[in-house]
Image 1 (cartoon, rainbow, N blue to C red):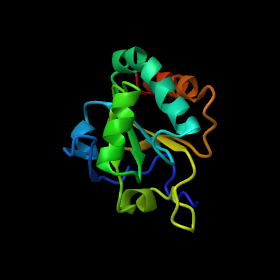
Image 2: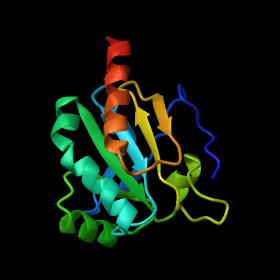
Image 3: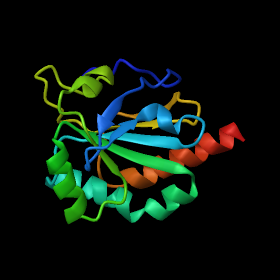
Length: 156
């Protein structure tokens, strides 16, 4: 894995299908919302489920802070649909089946497998405000929320 983007860079725009097949474009949120863009290896695996459920369990706090959560993996739309339904995930899962966005964001290993967890916080202007490489699932949602509070303070 070689994250080529840095904090302060413009977040590369993309369009990917969500768990219903609807296309979601990152730039839709520019000027409106802070985006938590988190990349994860695989739907319905222990670590990825724990990470997704921790975001789910804090969704009210994220919503109150004006934040949208986008989870990305190379799993297909149908897999995302089952995963989101099984765990009542109230945020958007995006399918990067072609691996183009994962490559653009530098979260794939040289083997082409995305088995790393990486989270990007993208500010309202569309810049990368914070990168969490090599995410540890325990406490990550709280860590992200703390970083968002600091970003919002700095912007005020």
